[in-house]
Structures are given as C-alpha cells and as structure tokens.
Length: 410
Image (tube, rainbow, N blue to C red; front, side):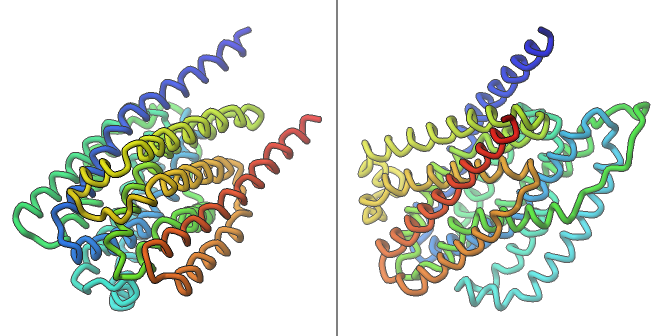
C-alpha cells in the first residue's frame, strides 16, 4: 500500500512540475520570440538575414550545453542523496578549461566559419564567447533539474529571457549592429552561473560521499546526439539560399515557436526518468509525448485559423510570402518535437544507436539544399522531407523500444 501511494505521489509531483514548466515556459518562450520578432521588425532585411545565419551558428555551438546539462542532470538525479559539493566544484573547473580550449579553436578557424556561413568576420569573436558560455551555463541548470528544483529553474529562465530582451532593445535603440543581440544569447546565462551556482544546496557534509565524476565519453555521445538532433532546424538557416534567407528565417522563427513550446518539458522528463526504475519509465514517456503533441498541434491550429493576421502582426506587414507554409511548418515542427522527446528518453538507457541514422539524415539535408535551393518553396519542401523521415525513424525506434520492454516481461 505504501509503495502504491509513493508511486502516485511521484506521478503527482511529475505532473505538477510539467504544469509549472508549461505555465512559466509559455511566458519564457513568448518573451524569447518577442525578442526575435522585435529583431525581425526593426532590423533591415540584410541585417536580419545575417542575424539568422549567426543564430544558426549559436544553436550549433549551444549543443554542448544540452549534452552537458543532460549528463549533469543524470548524475545528480542518481546521486542526490550524496554530498555533491565536490562534484560541483570539480565539474565547474574542468568545464571552464574545456570552454577556453574550444573557444580558442573556434577563433582559429573563424575565417572558415565566416566564409561557410556568409557572415562578416567581425561576428566571430562574439560567437566564440557564445561557445564559451554554452559550455559553462548548463552547470547550474543541470544541478537544479537533477535535484528536481523545477520552479527555481523556471524562474531563472524567465529572468534570463527578460535580460536577453533588454539587451537587444538597448542595442537597437542605440543603432548598434547585431553584436549585442548575439551576446544576449549567452550573457544572461553566465550571470546565472555566477550568482546561482554557488548557493545551490548539494547536501550535508556529514553524509558519506563517493567520488562522482562527469563521464566524458557519455558527454561526447550526448554531444553528437544533440548535434544531430538540432541539425535539422539549424543547418537550414546556414544552407538556405541567401536571396530567401530573410523570408525563410521568418518562417523558421514562427516554426520554432511551436518546437520550443512543445519541448518545454524535456528537461523535466529527463529528470523524472533518471529518478525512476526502468519498468515505470514508459508511462512517464507517454505522458510527456501527449503534452508535446497537444501543445504543438494547438499552436498549429491557431496558425491555421489566423495565418494572415499572425504574419501581418508579427512581422509588421513584411514576409507575407510565408503565409501559405505556416500551418504545415507548424505541424512538421510538432512531429520534430515528438521525435526529439523520444530520442531524449532513450538517452537514460545509454542507448546511442540512433547516431548513425541521424548522421545520414544530416547528409541528406545537405544534399537536398545543394540540389534544390532556389526558392522559399524549395527550402520548405527540403525541411518537410527531413522532418518526415526523422519521424518515421523515431516511430520505428519507439515501437522497438516498447516491444523490447514488453518482451522482458513475458
């Protein structure tokens, strides 16, 4: 009886954390996209195109943050009854060294990056700083997720988003270039690191501890997983024909509203799965997928009902050519979000077989844009193919995963 009661209390906590994350997450994502929409409306077409190319690189360099945060979340969740103070100090020092090395390497290859992304070399330095911050900023978030301090984490994300918007508003009101908006993607999270990480409680020193380390092999595998998972909606902004980059960037921006709103609960799901026994993880996954699909389809329905009004209001009459594609793009991003959640859930099992297929999918995306990249419709169709194939692959993985679990029970 006590075991059953404990289980339902655990599920109640999980649902509460999901609701908190969705409620605050809606505001966070709203402000994030007000930030991007503000840039779209106040930057010229050329500058907005440059920012979209830069933001594509930022998404890529922030992928280590997702891998590191996931690795720390898993470690802290599995060891939260131990004193994690030494782990907090050692992980911060180690990751600082790695951040410095990788940022220097990024600067050394800055000319190549600038040429590939078609952006001025003056933006390489702020992008290198974004890489530095991306490696360090996930540390406090990983600890908070692992300790399931979900409300605290969401409040911090809200504060970071407000600071991000404030920096962009200041830069554009002063007529500056896009350097400050680029740095706005990293400076708020570094402030969180400096102000919050030292005060995160990690257990009583009286509790015996064992030496806990970051498993860098797992971090590397997580990095490649999240690199390949994020490639579909980042590489397109770099590969798309520069002549339609601004309009495609606007379409991508609207689509990302669906995507990021749908995966808001990914961190909560990972933290819960890491705390659960294998036999009850399936239910947690299904609850998470239902929230993900419902969120994405609900926003896509709003796009369908108010397509022209949304484009007109959001972009102040610009980029009207994206209107025919918005609804389907929203549905595609919902499918992509579901795929993201499923593969995230498999990481708890330390399963990385999907890396090969995701690599082939990235190669396919490059080929699609190499041979079919003249118009906005071409870019749209390329992405539909990529998201569709990914979803089919993930459905096969999910069916196999469920069958495998059921097979163990029989």
